Image 1 (spheres, each protein chain N blue to C red):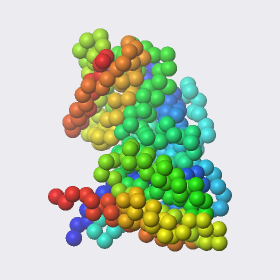
Image 2 (cartoon, each protein chain N blue to C red):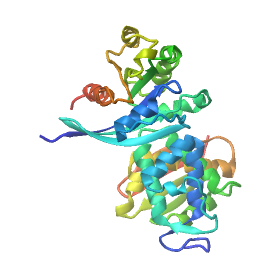
Image 3 (cartoon, rainbow over the protein chains, first blue to last red):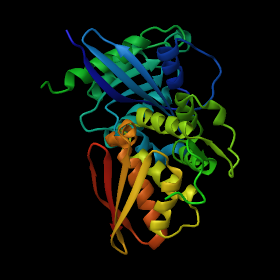
Length: 177
Length: 181
């Protein structure tokens, strides 16, 4: 069977320090570093993945969470077919920003038919947890996405699953010829 | 016709590459510029400017365009903005639009730019390439880059608000109309 080929632009969004870059590093290069260097502008990387029925090139946009990029963020989100919304389970403000800011930005500037999932990152820091899994699920429901996962960029838990789940959701939404 | 400013065959003036790198930085900041250079295999250009009066291998420019085609697909606004900034850095003082196009012609090997004036404020630019290089513009996303370049080129020349009226592409050429609003 010939596999279908797709290219998707995926934005990874969330507050500064939520672990967006670490998630991408883990997914793309299987590496994790404890050094925190804020992303300046947008870091972009291509990653090819092979699914059972499709070959997919992902163009991953790691978009800076700092306020100073507020004005250019709309341009960075332009054309994105999917987003991973990330908060840090140890810091409540990062959770609140998802609803107050990131989902609004994405819905306004991403593609109209785009898909997104919600991620609570840093699940390995359970002793510092401030947001329960149930709160994460509730937020996902209020954002109209059924997909919520807790991930750890450090251990790799659920990281690949998160990206693959989003890709599958996007593919399933593509009208069949 | 090859002007006195034309670099040798298979060479491109460093000012062209520097202008593109400045545009990357302006639009995408440090990490965006780094991403494009890493993809192009040119990370050594991250922290350095090429000597402005020198020339480099044309292949460097092709690698940068290829990185844009790959990483910036779907990002039409960004490609347009990079084109616009590239135009500013390449010709900061501005010049007549036909002269600007001629300058690009001098620089861009394997691409031929032909300008047809419809009036003093409306021009059609045809970009042609040899068959094996038509990927430089046949990819729809790259049209936005050229639109930005030409729009800003005409704006610098005649001022006021400029619009890109029409873009068409066939097998080996791209046609863009820019005009005063």
